[in-house]
Image (tube, rainbow, N blue to C red; front, side, top):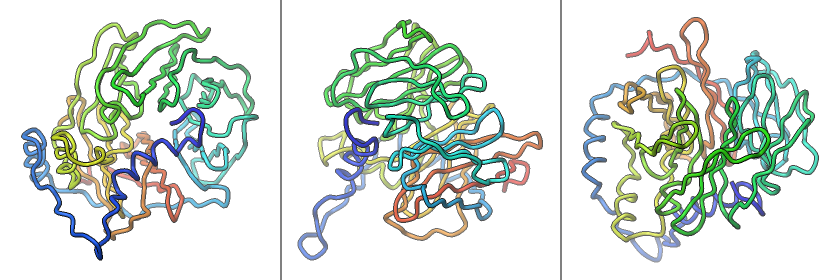
Length: 346
């Protein structure tokens, strides 16, 4: 999420620097690295013993105004909400997957859904660094985050009485802070290391703040007030053909780490982690300790370069069925909704 340009531009710069190598088949032959780290090798061996569950065909939602779905949430009313950072619109879909609302908030070009506070939707404006509290499609109050580093990627979360803001800079020092509803800062944590390690969404689970990484198979966790932490939550069993590029980058090669997971979300006692694939959906399911439990894949696997999932939301119903919504950008911007019943797993 960027502050002064299109929300997607910062992420696209990172992704394009990875995918667009500038080496054409007619001009050069790139030799792909094959080595991966010892921890990734262990994860790969664990994943090899998991029998994947095949997802049933999804319900696909396409709307004329849906151009670049960036964030997606289920609401307390069981409706699904999507923000689009190309049209600047926020969409609501009923439990029957029918679009129930579509609106824009004044002067917000790139809306980012930060979360729900009771029945209030919290929307972040990255240009103004402001949280908007939205009721019935109207912003009723705002809170501004002060002293945001210039040109930083911003990731935010609203949960209960806290608002979280992470600024990932181009340097090796990044800032994570929590404020209350008056805008007063409660605490701040300094994150060290490359921007690749810290670029990722924020989540909350079991009184912990979780800072995801889109480029490495781990997350960092703090107490919700940021006093205790960080601890590392590693996805044990995460496997990706891109891990060899991750390792090569860590060894000083390549232009950047590849995007391996654009979003993860906790539900009940499980974590659902998008495992990026070029053409199909794969979701890894982990327990709260980060140990893989299931792998969910689509039946049809076709290579498609313009297939880019950006976010997912998961909801558990009273029958024990998980409803999984995935936002997709590219040549076919859409929302895909899957249903998974663990009792019917392989």
